[in-house]
Length: 250
Length: 274
Image (cartoon, rainbow over all chains, first blue to last red; front, side, top):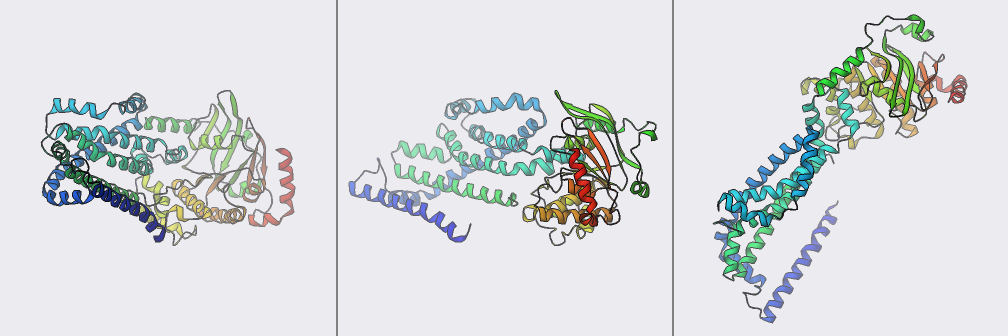
């Protein structure tokens, strides 16, 4: 993709967004919509500036939980994916269960986790793992699975050990899948953390949002939504960049 | 599990090691073989294989001596690749005896280079898998890179190479994996005809330079005559050795065979067989 096309790709969504924000501002101003119904973009910006310190502190907690949950998800996903790849029995037993388990509504599980594990950081981390583990694990398993038989035979003629076959063949060929799973997980990650915080906790951006919502300070709710979106976009683009570097041969 | 498979494979390879050599079962001797006079590296006696109710190979007798270039020529569906898989130890034969002396390198029509490794690391891969350290393996690969015409491309990735270059890299990797005994399964089948003819000449030069023993699969009659010392013609389904032919002309420089009228005659003979 050349520079011009890339600029084009960014120009259109950014322009559309700016127009939407301008319309939003105009409607709120002209129709005199009260702030507890819909704050204007300018109100939101003002709230962000006023409460910046508090929001940063809460977001910091949320990011900490997310990082922990994400790292745990990756580790668990790797462990289980390798087990499933190595032992057909494990895969046959667990893979269908894993898929069905994703139909359980996270929002219904969260209060139970809070009942079991309290209002601290643990239930939030567990919610994140519940949400993020699945896309990573499935992408890895599928990645290991789709390795061409001819390549596996080639490694057999080289008398490669299982570990060698894994390190030189399966792992690198699954990397592309792994990063697409990682990206999906990253988009859900902050959301999962907020679901956890929203339903019970003492700190984190989700807690801040519940409090401001209950006070009808919708400008502050919008300000925190803006920060969350911004952080998620940055995280995904970082992952994207790492992924592209790790699979540079593509 | 892997270890058990390896063991089973080794046993399959060794199952005839103690057997008496029976000269009366030797195929007809020819001058080219006598001159090379090498020991037998691959010997198959009455090898058969079936998949379910389908007979793929029946009673295949075959031998390859050290330094020879032997082709297996047959239409698609004649079980050529199955035969190779049996020799390479990837599948086991249902019947018959198989004896392989030496390590086998197996090269396919697909180059099977790893897209995430550079050319030099792809070539050095079998050495690394055998336990050589990376630097040493790279050095050994580098010593040959000139010969396969890939100097200057060592740090490129396979996606940056042409089809012919990929197959040359794959060939060198196969050679480093095995040392001398190479199974080539239609290695030039996916190349365009101009690249293909260049690669055939190149292969002959390489065989001479490396002193390699090559068992070659093809369905291209002319290719088999051009390259081989001997040709086994397989029929299709079930694969049976219809005829064993010795290419009796142009033994000095095989490239001259291309302009030899005997090539056409032999081609016609083989066509009638198939």
